[in-house]
Image 1 (cartoon, rainbow, N blue to C red):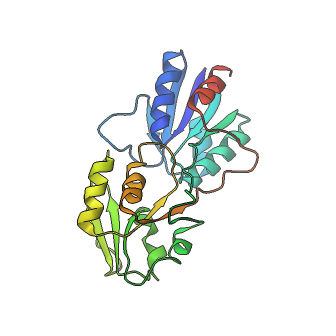
Image 2: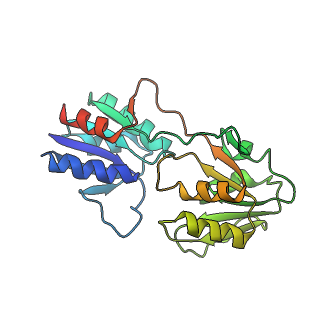
Length: 241
């Protein structure tokens, strides 16, 4: 069988490798160039997910579509699901289990970046891992300094004077994140609720330092989509096609 993976998560690579080892012909669609030094383990096509017809053209000839996109790439999931629906292709989304909110810690959840700023104090030094595209939502930022993580060096100038860009190459560890937050004198962390272990060190570092944490809720999935949060279950679905 030929499997199309909507890729963007670390699990997409793992699932692609496992499906190939099981005998499937695997292809992938990505909405941005893959990060890191490890190449994609299957042929991949870079495609903007703003045209369902273009996505359908890439999916033709496939037997099933597995959505293992980035947890906050809602457009890929929605457009990919619609393309698969029009082609009458089986479609499954793999999503990581979300991080929980400890009852005994100053952790909060928010539906979006703009709402997440409500509990931020006027003098707060906030470390943000919400991405460059989120900057317009910080226009009314009430804190003193917003330190925005960037994983690729670039010369772009932030649109607001209160923004300081913090460059760093993953993977990050609890020790490195703890040292960074101490050096930056950060007292608040805003990040997307991605779930999983790869992005967890910043939360563990924030917890160790007693920082306030605000987690942005994951975007909603399309109605009617079958969803699993276990890699083995996703692979079993693929092999049952």
